[in-house]
Length: 630
Image (cartoon, rainbow, N blue to C red; front, side, top):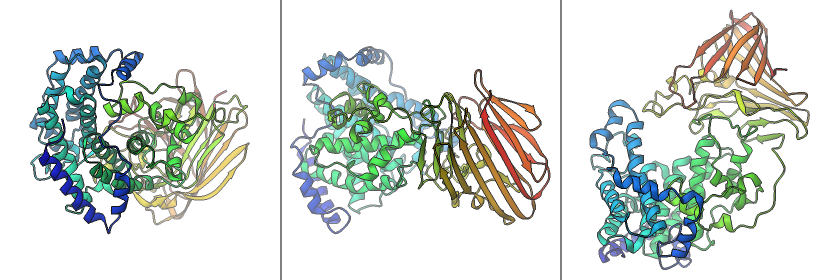
């Protein structure tokens, strides 16, 4: 069923106003017209409509889809979880995000499961339940998540904003409408279209045309930009009838998505961390693919060096043996998404054979994600370039970000590798961590960045750095005259010197600006990673003061530890161990072990091993020599 004449007329009116508003601005009217000529008459989403039985019957033979029908059958027997106003207000009262989001995920997940099951089976038995969940979610006051509606303006009907939650769900609902088509009752389809129009399309077009203040994500440089743009644009391309109106979404996405890429340094480093690279760049890839498919490849926002550099982050940030640093708000268990790695390797010709051998088809993830990867796309159609270099290179150097990963040589039997971080303290999902480091032995990070905390209202507020896992107390960096690192772009690791050879890598940082200590005259941290034998990392801090100050540094671990002498520690798990030898010039030192009592995303609470000088000093050198135990 098509939109009513009233909706079509309103859409064309909005389109004309939009073109007038942007003609002299960032988005050129002629570009919208140019794109409109590339588009098909009918809206198209990811996947193919349920009417294409050959395609769906073939997909039903894929083993990964075999459990979809039984999952949907269970949903037929279960009531829709209740999502009351009181539950929405829970965040406002307590700061807890989890309780509402858990129920929301259960409700919205029904859309994916029931739509997929019906498309695979085509018997009509899942349609009533699908329409029931559509009615339930369309009756919600707002699709904006409570954590993104702190003033409750959306909940109280005073505003209609677009956030991560509303844009993602809109894309799922639009995709379901595209797939199921005429199988749905006319009233249900109209309800979907009306809600997409009211909650997504009209607010977005009003913002883009300057009729209301834009939501901040349209010009931001973090994951929100790609995710919300992906959801809004993908929804529009899947259900809006007018080709000219669809064209304005593509033209807008071309322009606004450049902001997302600005969030990466020129060398492709993602300061949000690997978890948010999966999320943000994953949506950027999906946005690009939706536009690529809609225009027959004539518009390709991946076709530039900045997109390519950002797309290579997932491969370059591996430390060793599938272990990745949990910099920023990551989990220590974060890995690159296999579908995304398949996509970027094929699209950019990276030759990552292990990733490309994965079959990306499957019902997991969102409905649109499943459809993008389960049917032909620009990556699956790309001609493989063959295998890239065997194994990881001896280093990955993000020179603009000040992040270095050092690995053993190709012929070495060593399983010892490190990640060393400079950067600054105003990064996306920032932790105060200038000078931090991670040490991997085998397939485990025995010394590490413990990653992010479980999100609450405090996490994204002025109280963020009260958290001892987000401030510098939770990182392997110094405490200077009793002070932790300060926040802000002035607090940065200035690269003093680098010297990279096959035998060893030296990386020297001036980290003094990270500390608001007037007496501090010098603080240089020197990393030397040696590839000789089993490998060694030396971390040396040289500090100087105008008058005596206290000083100390730290190690962070999730594993066991013990003293093996007055100046040596062992960090170990069941079958791997590191030896840390400590040498201090300027004063005696003591070891103070403290559990970091925060609700972390790691499997257990981290332990901070403070290495503290016992008296104030005018100057000091604290040197750590870290190597595998023999």
